[in-house]
Image (cartoon, rainbow, N blue to C red; front, side, top):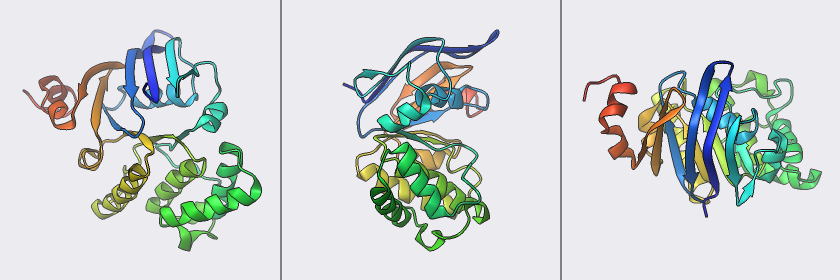
Amino acid sequence: MPLLALEHVSKSYGALKVTDDISLAVAAGETLGILGPNGAGKTTLFNLISGDVRADGGSVRYDGREISGLRAHQRCRAGIGRSYQVPQPFSRLSVFENLVTAACFGGRQGERAAWATAREVLEQTGLLAQANRPAGSLTLLDRKRLELARALATRPKLLLLDEIAGGLTEHEAAELVDELRRIKARGVTMIWIEHVVHALLSIADRLFVINFGQRIAEGPPRAVLDDPQVRRVYLGMEA
């Protein structure tokens, strides 16, 4: 049984169909990469999984349970954590306080457990030296790390990453990928939207490509990137 399964999921805004009959399944421990051009519907797909928006039709099942009717905070507490493309920390709180807040309210942990979780996640994500700094004063790399850390503090089984390598230098992206490899090694299931394709290829087990809200390819990474339609639509190359 897959950890996450979407069956014929659709979402429209007026006449614009942004998710069009999408079905996918993700196994426990798998890392699925999501590719597609700008405006393809990738972030909307995440919003439908995390509960930020409700699907118009179809089924979203997580850990064997239908969750289409659950709100975002309920899905988070069930084990679905996510980062956002634009980091949105509590800027006036310290890095440590951001993580304690996530652990308490997203992970339903008591205060003592939340403090321990925050300390552990700070070490995992290389933020320990920044623990007492206001979140709003961090560099872009550390804001990205904090966005990842806040999701990890909820103790997710399923982690949704939305362009977490975007805007980073080559060296910074490599550091981030190393952190994601360690998270993967602990058995966390990940779905990662990313335009930095080489970063995605370094850990993705499978790719899922969408355009105009529709699936156009799915399978092993190299085979998907060699697909003529993917090369034309996403890479801008003729087959």
